[in-house]
Length: 64
Image 1 (cartoon, rainbow, N blue to C red):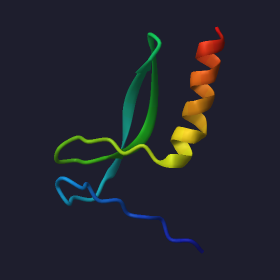
Image 2: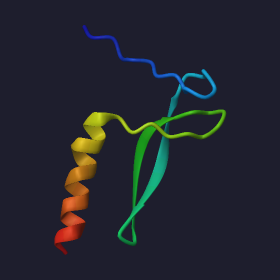
Image 3: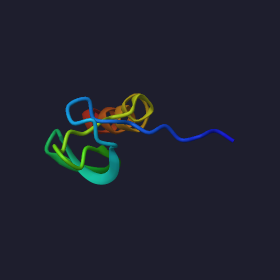
């Protein structure tokens, strides 16, 4: 069974925690749970999210 990766904030060294985050694109708001530093608030966008679901949403919005 694969163990889930634990990400640390490069600035604070604190473990990132999932938090609902609102992204704004082309006047639309989209929310998604992403890893966030509980200390400084920096957001980490995993590659699979950026190249997968986020890319799909961008394409759908641009086609409208």
